[in-house]
Amino acid sequence: MEQPVWNFEQEPGDERLDETGVNLRAYFDRMPDEKMQQYRPEWTDEQTIEWDDNFRDDGDLMLLCSEREVDIREYRRVLENCINYRNRVRTVVTNDR
Image (tube, rainbow, N blue to C red; front, side):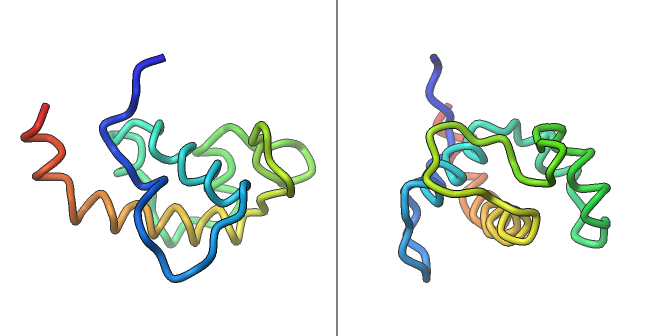
């Protein structure tokens, strides 16, 4: 498996991360930047779920090897933090390739 160019998984944050939090960050590290840039915070939860296309019928993200479920609220919060991270480091990361 090719490693992603992003490293949001290890980016310091305001909250203490459990295994699920780390896995969610790693999930976003592997999401293509082009897709992530399509996300709009004003979308409804349903639109966000459809855009990602990796949510189960019960509304939680399908995330392997996790201790707990990730609902849409947590997903959106971490996604928006990841977008901010990418916006901050994009120039450095893309120039290092």
